[in-house]
Image 1 (cartoon, helix red, strand yellow):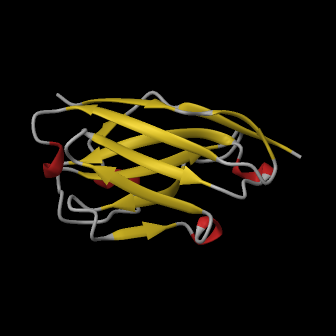
Image 2 (cartoon, one colour; image 1 turned 120 degrees about the vertical axis):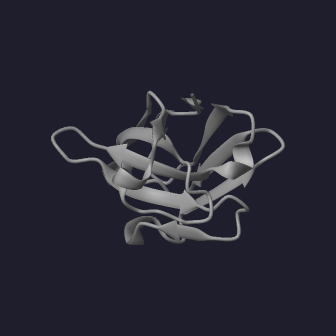
Length: 125
């Protein structure tokens, strides 16, 4: 069983930055591809960013390209989401997810096997 714990969310003004962290309790973190998703009130959960087991493959939601950066440290069992130039429309609960199919870079939530509890990001205008 894999447990994922997100941290780093909070309240920030538009144009500000946050870094989200997701710590995984797992024996071999590099076996897993990782992703970040978000869900705003009244909306469906949407893909934000994904990274393959090695970090060599990455994918992003179009609206966050150039502003968000996903990375991972396999020695620390942690995946990060650095967010800059935040906008009010980025406000959502952000979820970390892990896929046992580590070689891929997945945008569909159905590809993920484990989910964190989420961390709130609120961007004020």
